[in-house]
Image 1: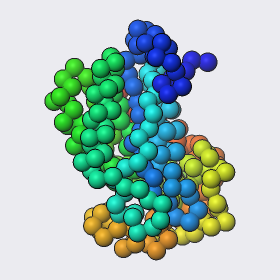
Image 2: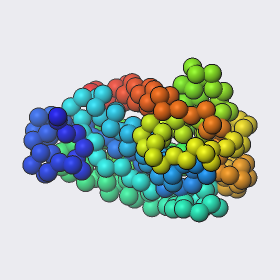
Image 3: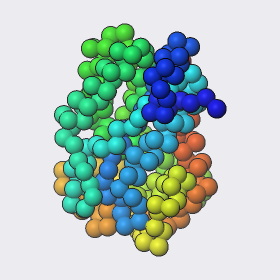
Image 4: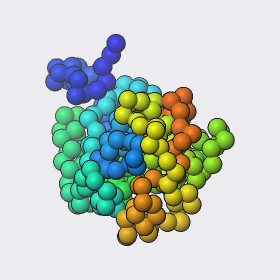
Length: 251
């Protein structure tokens, strides 16, 4: 089986892949933050890692770089376990990361933020890298509302409402973590959180924190989550990302 994760490859293997034309690399930018009473703090990173792996595989002739597993999570700091970076810190980390990849010959760098709090920082640093890495295409999906809409669309196929699907530790994220690491999910403690429209409340969460909407840290209702749904959601999300990337760069 051909390896695509550079963290599992030797430098010799990576050089051979580059020589074969594998000049596209994909990595996720996740977080370590509370995800309600039933999900691990690594939720966004677990999902991001799985998503990046699928996207790299579907693009073909692409490699997957290690995920960045801590992000901008200040709005979750009211609940234990959350670790947060300042936006400038995350941007510097991503900048150094991409410069390293570019020096080794990667010409197309695909960044997949899997945590909403990272989207603005990722968008800003990609705009900066477009200037500083003139010969490299750096692409990132940073439409947070678009992401929430298509995740809700996936859930709706199973009769799950947008409010149940949720945007944080609801049905959609819980289903995906069940599909990735079922052993880390405690469904006995899965409970409903904020059930309103999150799109209208995003600015409130950014400014006042997650507890402005929910005491248990959940936006949605995870109780209808299932492994099979999660597998489907990850596959559909990866397909969406591949379509997006191919519209941005020639792969």
